[in-house]
Image (cartoon, rainbow, N blue to C red):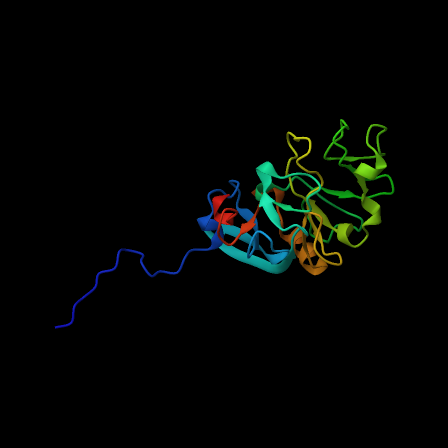
Length: 223
C-alpha cells in the first residue's frame, strides 16, 4: 500500500511575484524594486512592475548599482556614508540634462547651469533643488547638477528624507544613469533602461520604489 501525503494548501507552490510579497507597495499600480544580494553589495537588480486586474506583472528589468558603502536602513542612515537607503519611497518628479524621452508623462525638470542640489545641513534649502545656489548653502556642500552630464542625463527623484528632512540623514538620492562605478548612495541603471523607465512611469498610477536586500534585516519584503 502506498501512503498518500497530504500537503497543506499552497505548499510547494512557486512564490508570487515580488511586489505581492512586500509589506507595502505605496498603494499605486506601478512599482520599482531594487534588490541587492546583501547589505554590502554595490550591484543588484532593478525591476519595474505593473498591477493589472489585481496581479503584478513585470514590465522590465535591468542591472542596478548601489552606493559604494552598500545598503543601510533608511530611517537611521547617516549622511556621507555612501550608502543607499533601504525602504519604500515615492518618486515625486523626473529631471535631466537632456530632454525627456518621447512619451514621458512625469513632470520633467531640465537641468541648467544654475541648478544645484543643496546638501548643506545648515541651509534652509537642505535636500532641495535650488536655482541659483542660495547664500546659506555652501558650494562644497551641494551638487552642481549640470557637471554630472552622464549620471543626470535622466533621473527620478527618490523621496528619501524629502518630505520632512532630518538633518544629517542624507540628501540627493536619485534613480539615475550609471556613472563609472558604484554610486554615492543613489540607485543607477544603464541609460537605455533609465529612458525606458521614464517612458513607462505614469504619475497617475503613483509609482514608488522599494529598495532592499534579498533577505535578512534589510529584506525588501519588509518595506
